[in-house]
Length: 428
Image 1 (cartoon, rainbow, N blue to C red):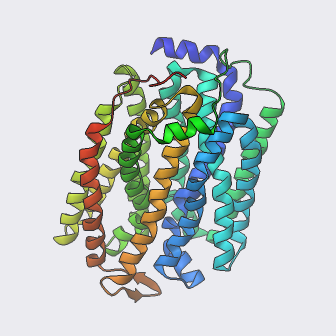
Image 2: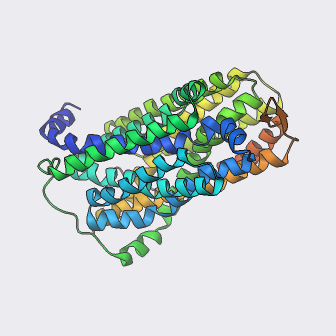
């Protein structure tokens, strides 16, 4: 690791561009995490909408975010990350500033879609810049840093955001968050205009392939296996974190709003810690990816079974909290799926492969979020207590029994994904 730190120190000027771009990405992750889950009850009460309609607020962001990933990956490979963020950052800031100012549900959905399009440029641009600025040999560790910073934004979207919205109107809090995003975007523009980050870039430019190579990438069966397993694990964790987790702890486990938010806060913190640890562990273990992939898929099955038992037998709240933390541990190892997706192709399609993987991850969230809302609305006769809708334990039980089926399939499929050991399968 001493060699790693020496190499990074030699490229220290790269951080002048890397830092504002990473902070901007963190704010985009906050938007994904905080809305709608943390303020689920406030949105439902203030806008007078159902649980399904609340889930659409999150889905409208994630839907356009996910569908844009493959195309944005091509743009990043073709034109470079910094140019893509110049446009995408402006679109993102417009969406997040507009959202808290709107009151009509349809306009809120549109604002979230605009923010989602802009947010879609952040992650893939960071992947390409991390590779360009710090080299492939340091890539897994730097991507771990990117994930930790992103999840840091998500962490703020849990308990800190819940406490702020308890003290101040949620619209005011989100407006301040939007202005902060705008500040980070301006910082990025200043760094880009001054040329920072270019001097530290490794020599050589990867030749970018066209759409023919993209089609070849999509015909790669091992990539689809990797995407299937990674998407299952990610979408379950993300929906728990951002849509239904806090609500479940309140309705089924009897926790207070602040107590439930504290569990989601801890869940995100654990995921951040495991992400950084797993990124470093893969480098120390010769860049092996598959052991962590098998671990994540197996743990996901155990978590689902425990959740079903906790709901069926009405177990104490600490069991639910512990299971949520276990979901975070499984999600923290998912960096191996992302790295493998990139390495199953060639250097010229690295960002597109990552974009495809990221697209399917969030498409899984888009498909699962309305399913969650449907289960809660249609099973167990939800009740209204003091203006808050309380969903039955039976509805949550049916939901997790349903989710157990695809997770079991993923635990089998993961064994057929090849080991890349940090190298591209093709060099063309």
